[in-house]
Image 1 (cartoon, one colour):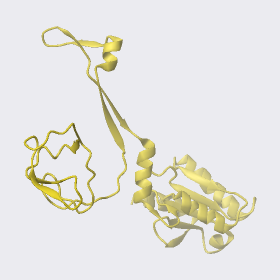
Image 2 (cartoon, rainbow, N blue to C red):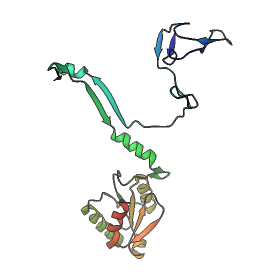
Image 3 (cartoon, rainbow, N blue to C red):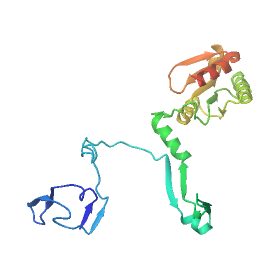
Image 4 (cartoon, rainbow, N blue to C red):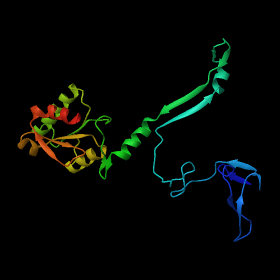
Length: 225
């Protein structure tokens, strides 16, 4: 007979009678029976009562960000790793392992910061602060402006991902949204004709045309908001 570890701590429980349609009231361990195995086998479901306070339980998703393993003296015994206690007696070191998973942290960020187009990285943890998109052919004014801004950002130690691929604007914008850098800067013939480069936050639909000489200031301000 296998019972959950809450059973010996509970009183006057209802138990099956090994006969269809019949139950036994007010059973208690060990008065009425002695389990062969006592283990944590019960699986709580939404709506069940909390074993501590009686409140209704709910279920929510979670991610294991870090873990701790108690290693005891298994490895220190094997290695002869000891310390001297207060009485100058050599004793094995009690070891533990503590870890935080970078990949798991990324999963947490992705679950919390995303939309139907892709990731929306917070500036504090984004792998790239800016997606710089050139919509001009090589050697065009738009492409030249984009490359000048790219160099300025690198000199200012701003982490920038420069997209100068021979792809359509739609593909480039979709990829920028998917990657999710906090800011997108676009250099195109249209933006230059309007007075500068287009600046857009990933978490907003608003777009602003910024003169090239003011762009770095605006980018810095947006990243520190």
